[in-house]
Image (cartoon, rainbow, N blue to C red; front, top):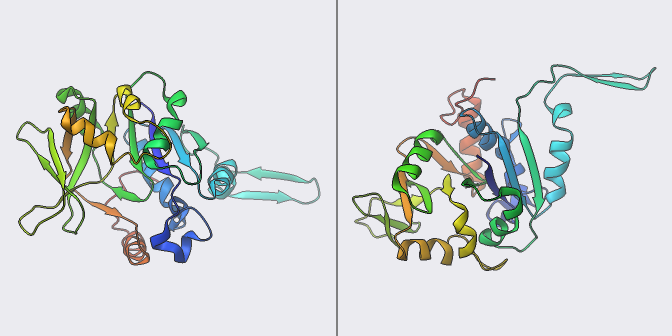
Length: 258
């Protein structure tokens, strides 16, 4: 199953670093957070990625063009003009980077990569958040529900939009948070059936708006509750928090072996 990663936004809330590179390419422990996200999926058997790029998309393309150079030892033989990359094996990923436009909204970015998906279910997540999500349990939850989409939800305790969920797991409504809420928010790590493309009209449509709200109205959106670790990287403070965890050797989202 293919994994779409939304990586085209401007990242204005972390402009201290995003003025140089796309937010998903900001590094945690010398690895772009985009690669951390890929490793979360790949560790659980999902290794075909479609990166929806936009802002400074060439940085993402250049990184993967030189991936082996950046992630292995290398010998430069000046006399013979050769470059020898050692320890090349870094997994069996397939990464497609698509320029989905500078100002395209999240729904439009997903729509633009339809031809790379085909007529099959796929996963989609944001390129700025990590967690120890059990992807196989998420997929099992999606299949069991039999709905067009499943989103992962998390009790984060911030003033973000709240999701109401029925006892059968279906999403009932989106609304603003109140002090009485358990603060369940959409954290990405979604599974979608290909019918979702029919809910997206074009580039100017945020995925979180009409497409997901229409699924709710039609009782076609399911919820998977994640009760482990999750953290987004919207601000420099959140980036530093992730960096501190990584450097401590206790990063909860690191579920892969080196």
